[in-house]
Length: 200
Ligand code: GRF
Image (tube, rainbow, N blue to C red):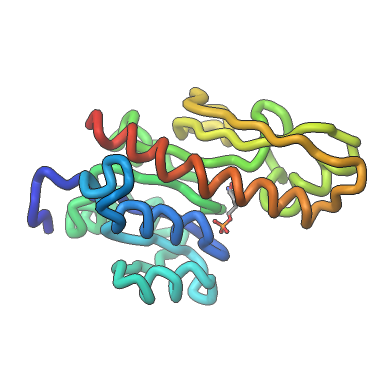
């Protein structure tokens, strides 16, 4: 399903709240954004039927698919889904299932993730969502940030594309850190995706 071959079709994979998914959708819907009209979010993939991201996407008119882990790991069925929606590029945004090796190789160089810390710090197993911000505060860090990276078979270890940092105050709680991180994510993630899809 590819109406205009000039327009790259992005699938956002998300498991939760979906603030990044919403920012990315809005960015590419805005013709004034840099490369704004060069791509669109054509699909949101989610593995949790109750996740708010599904309603956010639907409210913006973006098709959604709720998948199971076994569908994600079934190469034939999952690639059929990608082809049905004409997907060219995948952006993970708070997606909590491991990406299977076939998808990494079929979308080689075209799957990215955003991680809410300055990798390699606070990455890997168990480091997701609020756990990261709690660990950062507990360690007394004076800076944290975001990392946008290619997706590889090892969690949080793909090549780094972009990082941005933010200063922390000694009084910051994990909730404060999360707010600072979301602000950084909304500025940078859509723009980095835009740069990457414009060179597809
Ligand atoms: C973001 O902080 C992102 O970096 C991480 O998961 C969080 C998802 O937040 N991978 P949201 O669902 O986009 O609000």
